[in-house]
Image (cartoon, rainbow, N blue to C red; front, top):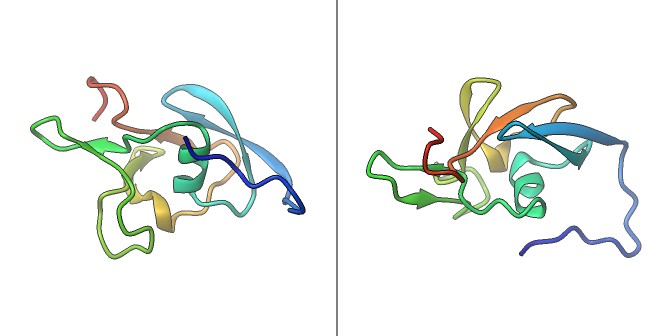
Length: 96
């Protein structure tokens, strides 16, 4: 599981986001992808056939890390987290 680096790191202010309906802590300036990975989420969305997808390139060239943010599809690796953001992943089979 991914984890945030904690030694000798100065973080910006803590904020709260909702991941699949559950409150989660994040820090201003982090990408949605890093917040999800730190929260233990590895399945970001599922294909129409149900295959799990997650971060692949982490630089915005592919679309493997797409998630729904406040109802709109966005690439998690290219989106900076905002306080109160609602993120929906494909971690559960019933998710989009």
